[in-house]
Image 1 (cartoon, rainbow, N blue to C red):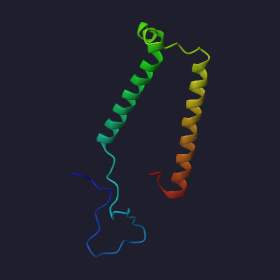
Image 2: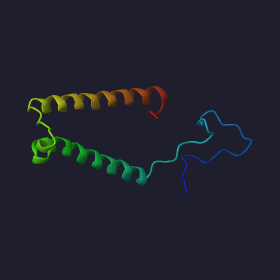
Image 3: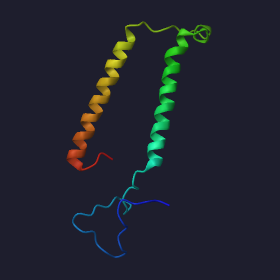
Image 4: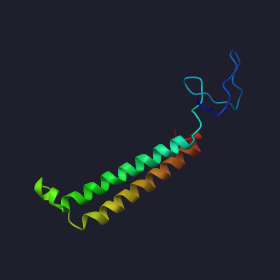
Length: 104
């Protein structure tokens, strides 16, 4: 059963000034613990895959399949670029929320 952020409108009624409708005529479902679980699981899987991608070139398996380890100077640059990307996306999301009321 889906929970809605507001009750669906009565058939034949017009939306009030403050009521917003999506293209399909209903609002998005309320975010609940299921969405939080999915985000946590996705983040965990992503981190495991990233760690494997960093560790494998330094292992015997990486050498056997022709991978070479990245130079140590690569990792600080990687952290700097990813941190800048995350900061920029947060700034853009805040701007969209101020302009449109939500970012989705």
